[in-house]
Image 1: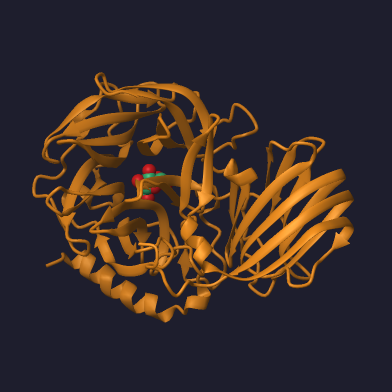
Image 2 (image 1 turned 120 degrees about the horizontal axis):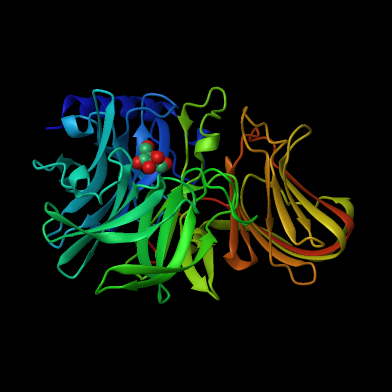
Length: 492
Ligand code: FRU
């Protein structure tokens, strides 16, 4: 029988969630059942279905005492809403059930590992906790917390110790958690256990040394195409070069992992998403071997920008398939999305000079591919456009720069209006794939070697798309309207 806090959250979200019509939400990006959503949590496969939990404050559109919201899917696009899984209802998590992860146990149970937050006499303690369940109801372990501040390296801070990522290899459980070392900057600690209850600190996988931001949040650690990948989300990053932005920016650390010594050796640091809204990613390994990433399509610097009248806030990115190629992180929309492709409008060899628009190219739920060859000058794509608004992608081949600009996108106060990033463009050629879903755009550059994601605030009626070439651009366009596939199970 759930404790009163969880019962209350469940009945509240059931009533509020039902009051929202599907048109008020994105078509296929996950939003909270009610209220506020931040980090993805517990992204896992359990009994053959994908489960995704999230940091959740159901009672309003602002961050508050953290619960875990919950949903599941067979295809990562149709999400079935399930009742909230965790509420802050125990002394060790009374101030929040912070981020964490999930895995299936060999005997068929679903284990959640999360951070319990407790404030006591002006001090905050973050500890790691376990809850075990059946895919709907979860029981917190009677011996929680299972990892406390006593198991931190000396000098580490007990109130910045969070977001365990759990996985299993052979008979052993592993957990990587974010922490802050004696120099005040982030580190990722590695723990192991045979029973989920007793944990041993194995060491530090990597640390910031004040070079890659301060606190490191939300780690993930996995093998991808022969390399070890450590994802971290630093706070207060002061970027070393224009590939990164200052503040909150998730990083991909590439290297190797020595399983004997548990030592991770970092070789390079890559951006993950160079748009305006992306943080705290988490991955899973799909049954067919794909490594799939999902993130909060928002950012703490934009987290107060709730459009007036909107009763939900925060959404997940589209799940993306990950690869490494020539030292780069490649992300592509999950292939399941192709089944949602409906009516197609395509043009080849269009010569654009000045302003242009093309019949049939418009909409807010689209899979749009552009192959550009800028012969002279610059090229701008405008979308989510009406008389007053648009969001733009500006390509300047002379500087090999791509700018995502939403200064005219009906921004609530405080939003970062634009970001420019260097791209690899050969002789003015650039491939762009845009996924538009009512309240967001995700731009995949050159087959996914770079991605830029941003939330949109423009009215839904603003659905025009236009082009502007200062100089001359040759372009191929292919546009698919996206609509739910009737056969989500077909390929499984
Ligand atoms: C990252 C984060 C996590 C924490 C959670 C709290 O966005 O700050 O470190 O667990 O959000 O909601």
